[in-house]
Amino acid sequence: MKEILEKLEDKREQARTGGGQKRIDAQHARGKLTARERIDLLLDAESFEEYDMFVEHRCADFGMDEQKFAGDGVVTGSGTINGRLVYVYSQDFTVFGGSLSATHAQKIIKVMDMAMKVGAPLIGMNDSGGARIQEGVAALGGYGDVFQKNVLASGVVPQISMIMGPCAGGAVYSPAMTDFIFMVEDSSYMFVTGPDVVKTVTNEVVTQEELGGASTHTTRSGVADKSFANDVEALVQMRRFFDFLPLNNREKAPARPTFDKPVRSENSLDTVIPSNPNKPYDMHEVINKLVDEGDFFELQPRHAGNILIGMARMDGETVGIVANQPMVLAGCLDIDSSKKAARFVRFCDCFNIPIITLVDVPGFLPGTAQEYGGIIKHGAKLLFAYGEATVPKITVITRKAYGGAYDVMASKHLRGDLNYAWPTAEIAVMGAKGAVEILYRKEKDDTDKIAKRTKDYEDLFANPFVAAQRGFIDDVIMPRNTRARIVRGLKKLANKDLENPWKKHDNIPL
Ligand code: HXC
Image 1: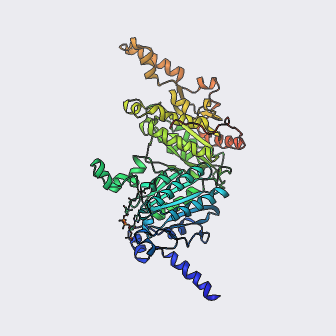
Image 2: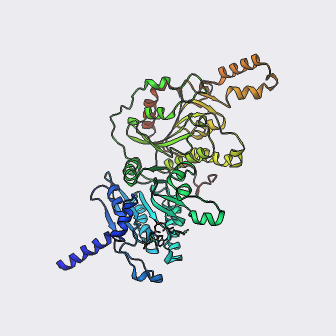
Image 3: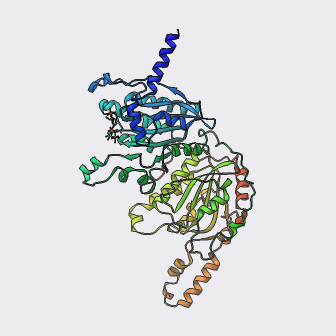
């Protein structure tokens, strides 16, 4: 009996060494942790329960029958993060470069199935050379099966991808279908085809970092939601992020007790808006002063900076924040910011997270680049996302809310539940200057007349009261009371019950 037990321990020990010490050392030399070390850091101590530790690939070509590693390049199982259940997979680069075989795919699918069955999020730690070349089409099939599962799990349980090494070819498309992508700087890459193929096909010479490093995907492409300096920081921050999320689409996010008073009056907000309406101010400051303990987990901070998105809490309850940022492009909506915010709004709506929208928007960004790039369709994404969302929606207009962008930003017309404005709000079709130029074109050379017309327009529209008279704004509130009003509003809306008409699914303008 003892011998049998020891045999099991030996087998486990062997599986834990993955592709062997030499490859583990190489992984460490690159500044990367191993698959198991990552799981250890991500999950609560002693909580990890591994599945399929003894699974081996079934490929016999290219001498593969002579090379078998227990676990086949991916460690899978479940555990807890701050006591809450999560399913994980962590690709082991020391085994065939973490490449995906048919059995490797089956292991991932098994934890995805479990996650969906019990209603727990899935976190994937990706570090893979893509499809296992020796397996050919069997590996492609494996990817296809994972993709299909990603689609079915979307909107059922949160799916989060951590990119912690190369991610080439098919390896990028599973993460792309998950809710969030976090990358590690200088050691992770995502591209459909690598630099060599790019050179052959387009003659472009580009490094891995330029093509698909964290810097590229957190700034230019917006594919990744955030990046971190190293594996350890990424995993620690993932634990923090996880705490904001509900386990599945039927549950609410966990409340976290806070020492921050729900009715805290924030006097400094009364003076945050500059007297010159064209002067920017940092919307981060407003957010930090409103949310519990100034704790704002910003997503995509370096992409489309004209809109801010992220998670925070109000009196302990998770909320999604969407806010125009006057510091970048005057806070206007453009293609990138619309796409960025639309996907986030949809995530919040899938997972019962109320949305707080802070509005200071001068309109959509004009120009051929935007029109040729399809701003009509992309801007409509955000409009659509807000319009379909049934979670509690509280909107505060701090300053400008002009034109179509006024409608888009969770207005009353898109079923905003509570729409507040600060006394500094200006709700109009457009700014005074633009309006006067159009209405009084014939008087354009008479500066006195134009100045008077502009002043008249401002007096009439550069305030929240015209909208308030119509009930488009529920109340004009003192900035300092904003936190108290939002917290109170959220409590009232906690049991909000609103359903969209039955449909198979909607057809958001993609
Ligand atoms: C099998 C692989 C592999 C793969 C790497 N390895 N990728 N084995 N299939 N796809 C193995 C290597 O042979 C090596 O084995 C070990 O992993 C480490 O690889 P290195 O090349 O030594 O490491 P490094 O220099 O860090 O380069 C990592 C890499 C490179 C950038 C990922 O290995 C690479 O370019 N791999 C191929 C990427 C690729 O083209 N994949 C297919 C994509 S197509 P030893 O034994 O020496 O340790 C695809 C289609 C799916 O995914 C489409 C679905 C829709």
